[in-house]
Image 1 (tube, helix red, strand yellow):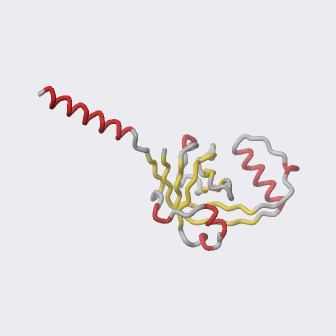
Image 2 (tube, helix red, strand yellow; image 1 turned 120 degrees about the horizontal axis):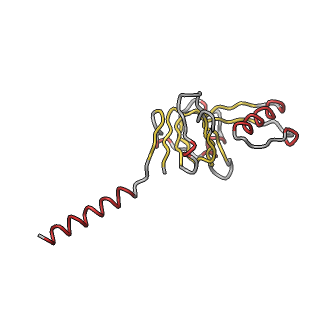
Image 3 (cartoon, helix red, strand yellow; image 1 turned 135 degrees about the vertical axis):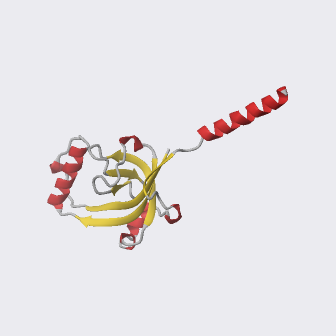
Length: 157
């Protein structure tokens, strides 16, 4: 009888340890489609292809919109250090606690070429959102914005 109780206790401990070791996931929208994972460098090498064809990207969350949780910046691969995931306000609300977690997002890419003045305005706006200093004189070139518009996002610890 004692042996039976010891085996049951051991089994219970093993099950509890494996359950606590499992990564926790949080989904937004439909969640990410893990069958369509593409490197961000591949995506941005042919941006026109991914503006109509859904794909899944991944990266570690490095910033989240502090006001409405409507965007996240993901650290991606070395060729493209970050990519912004952006949703309409209120459609999905990404928590600030997502920073440091891995995000998988399924959706499409959008591209917007800005002139120099628009670039300065955009960067000033982002600095204000993040409550960080910004000097417009430091900007000398226009940028192209790439945003990823997700249908679903999965956050993994």
